[in-house]
Length: 351
Ligand code: CP3
Image (cartoon, rainbow, N blue to C red; front, side, top):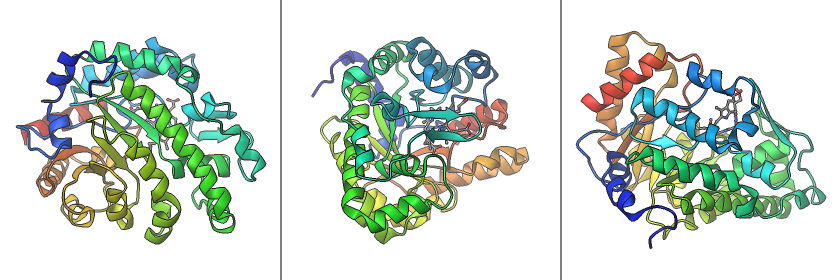
């Protein structure tokens, strides 16, 4: 069904883009490439724009969001744009006291640890994030035929920030709650799934051409725990977009043991970090899904010849999947040289 807000002509043209064709399991004439965290601190023009504005305030300013999303498109000419926002924005929009602290990440003032704490997580209404609709609308006009990826954090990754109160290596409090109070856990993840789906719905209805669900910290779980405590909720988020005719990308870090399970929750494309080679990842994911990845973000710092060989190796192994979208195995490291990122785009396109 036609989506509201997106002019039909643009959607028809964008459907033939290398990014959307690869996502659909096709082999376009070039391997499409974009970078997670392509907008941001790696670009001097981003640092200049953001100098006096807090991260979440930038996300609420449609002019800033539009400009920051477009900056890496002008510089790198990648095959897709990713909407500039953050996974904690919808939590802030429903009233969670969360801030993004530079060099740390999201910090939650009152962590969620009991049933009473759940009340803060009311459903997200489209009018809670009017700036998202405005920014996506202006972006699809500015982007022309370059596809726009909308995104959100998956329930488990959001729950970890909410329960720990900030970034965590061990996820101790998160797992303690998951194991000891399963009913509360599933209630929490259910609410987060609703918020996440509503946040993605605003982006898709405003014209986003694809969605990526980031379960960045799911790799901390065994496959068994992932299937029992997490998969049903991620599944529900992705199922909400089954009839939109847009690809759903699902990504996590350190998820070698989960690739099969993550492919089963309703993703059209599975994002793979750099620890598992793509041809091996394809075997674990199973047939019918495209892959996205997976150059080590630190390979950007390798000598030119070795970098070029690594880029080609990723492209060769990616050919084992029905469709392959080139990316790094996680976000661009802030110390990366933007010139090297532009060179990687050329190397992938020449492959
Ligand atoms: O270019 C893009 O990829 C789009 C923008 C984007 C941001 N965050 C902007 C951002 C995306 C897709 C995200 C998702 C996100 N946010 C994730 C999932 C992706 C991943 O990395 O696994 C996670 C876990 C977060 C939470 C978060 N927000 C972290 C861990 C940080 C870094 C904190 C730091 O300073 O080291 C943020 C802040 C953030 N989100 C920045 C940007 C550009 C940096 C803030 C700044 O520039 O001051």
